[in-house]
Amino acid sequence: MLKDKVIVITGASRGIGEAIARACVDAGAKVALASRKQADLDSVASSLPADRAVALACHTGKPDDVDAMFARAVERFGRVDGLVNNAATNPYFGPLIDTPDAAIDKTFEVNVKGYLYCARALVRHARSRGGGGAIVNIASIAGMRAALMQGIYGATKAAVISMTQTLASELGSSKIRVNAIAPGLVETKFASALVGNPAILAQVVARTPLGRHAQPPELAGAAVYLLSDAASFTTGTTLVVDGGVTSG
Image (cartoon, rainbow, N blue to C red; front, side, top):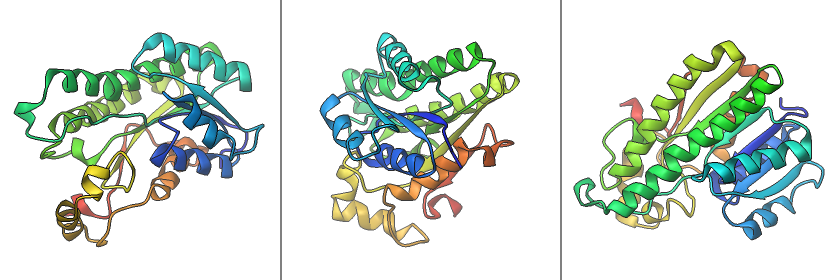
């Protein structure tokens, strides 16, 4: 589905990002893996075919880092066809009104600014070669309804969904598709505060029709589809992958 396409994936050193990277390679793509820690990226890249993966340390909240990372990806593979915005942070768990200012700033820097900076880099590159491409933003069902104890995180994911719709409208003429995926609870280190709390996990599972939480590879197929030509007439949508939580 992704034969010889080049995909930049942020937050690719573990969890959902790593799972998407592996699925993209399995689908025939070449991948540029981005995250803040080079050593963690190197570990993932070393387990993939050397001619199909490159590890590029990058702080996505810093525009100069993002531009340099994209330049290196283009230098390595000759072009970039797609982007998965997955890098995110959630440093605070508690009532929205009590969120420390530093946590507010950090969450918006990575989860909103970072997504926009990476999208901007992809768009500039795509337009320089005549247009065409696909962006997949990893949002969350926390951006679609009340996000109790995760209010700032939820606010950033609501912003991601809005950003997805706006970019889809603005970039259609450049043949760049923009979509989002809204996961429910996925077992990752990022979500350990929820998955690792038996009481919270039981509450989530109780309201999930499929009766469980997800594993990272269960998000990967949605990303591969949205990046591929199979989704050539799909843009501006948010694909919910939550085991049915938001169906009721």
